[in-house]
Length: 472
Length: 50
Image (cartoon, rainbow over all chains, first blue to last red; front, top):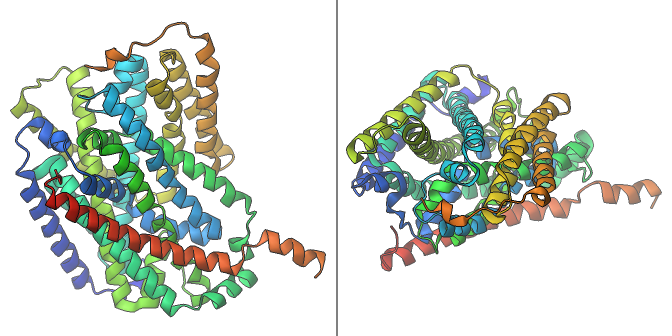
């Protein structure tokens, strides 16, 4: 814990904010959750979500605690390119826009990304995909829980594990109450608070910081931060972009949103959410650049954003960052809990284990899985792993799924064996690159290997896939 | 201007680029908030929220 940070916010104020917003999310979850009368309502919010809520939920889900906490880390370690590198994750949302249109056309009654892999490529690709998706989803959940706990500790002196417990408890409770209705409804409020908070903090830091002096200090003390040719920063730019593609294309969080929105709304909502998301990492990240010129003692780089905001803006900055990160955490944790439980229930429970699909039981199972996922995350958060390590270790796995998904959606000659090999080889070589070269190359190498396997295999494939098989 | 200075012009990102990157990102965030509010009001009035 940073001693300087304890003084930023009184622990009682931290707990008060946590309780206030926690109760608000639980109330709104219960309020919107009353709309869910069927299993489809609970899992997919009735499949009629409009543009405003659709855009907000896609954007808020993608603004994770990692965006608010890691974008400053990128800026601190990789300078100006580092901020842009984090923003390239928005390209995943842009490119998912046309994919969502295709998904709704091919699978009008679909539920999960697993459904697609099973129907399109068969069981082996499906099993492998489920493993990749679950590893990533749990890694994402744990990275957010860890970030939340660290933030509570840094800003308000709330013990790490107490903070993690409170955040997870709130998210599990309101997701249990309202399913996807609660998730999408609260996402709108949370996205408005995140945007307003980032705008306010960023503007105040700009007003109170001499940017010219900041630039000159960097030029003398850390010139690499303004180096246009910094190799690691340039590699991380492309690596992050491909990681973003992999995260969005494969994960059921996005597929469930594509199925939840009205068919004509989904592509526009995803594109617009990408536009709204793009400037956030830069606006949230640049404040870390002033850490050196302000003489902020950064003990843990993961908390540099809140520390600088607190240093420049005092208690107001600390409160704003606290609220923004709590909203970022909640908007992503609730989405992951809902979408991952949906994937586990539909794919593992219904299709593999053959559990009953009788509506009342199905909803009960769904709630049980949400609690189980919350508990698993809580246990893993106790290990206090490094945020970057958690997040980027799963990068090569999800990047290997990019091309099997694109090819599967658009090419009727993409073969199941090619999809399996693409995911296996891409993951293996990506993980090798992660440990032997560096995290900033892992997703890039995985995506390239996966692409090569798919491209080489297509001319040799003589079978053509009948798209009607996706109408289950 | 020496060759070193010419090279530095290409190697280092100029101050103006950094400044406008920050300004435009903040403007983008503000515009995003405005767009969300306008869309919400439009969908709400048209009964298109859910």
